[in-house]
Amino acid sequence: MRTPVASDAPVDIRIVDGVVTVVAPRLHPGPDDLIVDADGRWAIPGLWDQHVHMSLWAQTRARIDVSAATCTADVTRIISDHVQALPRPWQGGALLGFGFRTATWPTQPTVAELDAVSGHHPVILSSGDVHTGWLNSKALALLGIPPRDTQVREAEWFDLQPAITQLSAASQDTDSLVRVAVEEAAEMGVVGIVDFEMAAGHREWPQRFDAGIDRLRVRPVTYAGTLDEVVAAGLWTGRQLTESTDLLTMGPLKIFSDGSLNTRTAHCCQPYADAHDLEYPRGQQIYDRAELTDLVSRGAAAGLHIALHAIGDAAVDQALSAFEATHARGSIEHAQLIRFEDITRMHALGIRASVQPAHLFDDREVTIQCWPDRTDRCFALRSMLDGGVQLVLGSDAPVSVLDPRLAMAAAVHRGRDGDDPWNPAESLTPAEALAASTDGQPTIRVGNRGDVVLLDEDPLERADTTAEAARTLRNLGVAATITAGRITHLAL
Image (cartoon, rainbow, N blue to C red; front, side, top):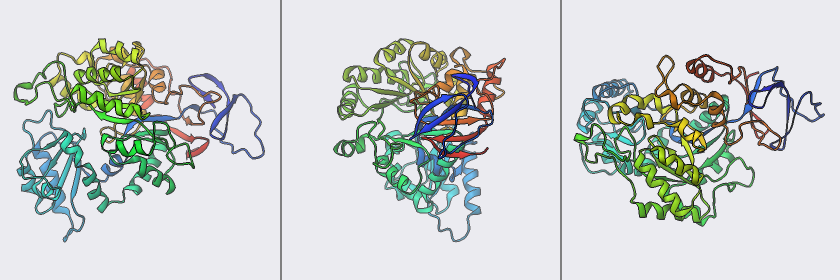
């Protein structure tokens, strides 16, 4: 096999007890060695998705797809057709859907519109950025929410997620769906995820590993609601969650600093361009500075890294101030809009930027509508990397697809196949995108984790345009995935 980052010459790789012990030409196998003949394929370090909502990603693909809707009428037509096609009597409980994005719609959804097409069925629809719910009256009553005609947003929506997960589990076996999602991730070359699911992952994932759902390294995060429980259990970031394997370790404390662009709740230094009808023209901050600093301090004192959600530039500023005040370690999650001077602060603090390049696809149009005067500071990947900030890539699945190949392609071309790139000065090279997708192991070296992916093509093949380079990354064929020396996918 050949390694595109370290060497183009054919080499053999030996993995012992989950660690790379030798990288050299023409190794002689021992009598007990398991041999994978790569037949000259390309070897790269295992790929990671640094921001996934795993249960939601698994469940979403079994929900009603409303992602193609461009107005409320599109959604109500989809729901009406679905209701009409249900068997009689219907015993499946609430109808759940996913994917609508209202930022560019001519009108905003109402409960009454959904009531008109849903009959006696509770209907719960999640927005594509997972920051908004559109429910009918039956669903509002089911979840104990007083009657209303508007959507459910941000913190109020997040608080409902455990109950909605239970409704979903009543009609679907979530762990079975997660098992399939994990297997499919391994088929894409994924060896690890950071799971941002809002459930108690430090309890759920050990049970899944015991049930054999163990093809990936997993770092489940905790939220403020379970922080006391995690602290009481002594679960600092990096601690094993089960004695039987080091593949499952505690992740960071996730904290929301603001909302999202599509709901116009990302907290910005200047008002949104279309702020004439907004209650909060600069978006919303979830905590004031003192409250945020206190929460960050509590997590850091317990040995937890901090994953601080900040999409707007004012939220990034507030997040960095909290890191400065507490000396906590961790990441800014998303960093979608950033002031260039704050890149210097991130570098000085050693704070990572955990970014999701495929959000470029969905947010391009709404950014031009909401932030036309600051698009040069959106997804500023090149500026952050050149400023010394460590970049790690993810998907935020189900907001975008759990597939690091897609994230790398988006970072390189900054547009869909066939699109002109959006602000190409902020593009990464294929080598930089790959390095940001391997959890700090950009090459296969002795002493590294024994996580290797065999590819049918050279991911760094010379290309004349970013579109060609992105096409190569997006279409990489994965022949094998090896996690800690264990074959988790094989298509040789």
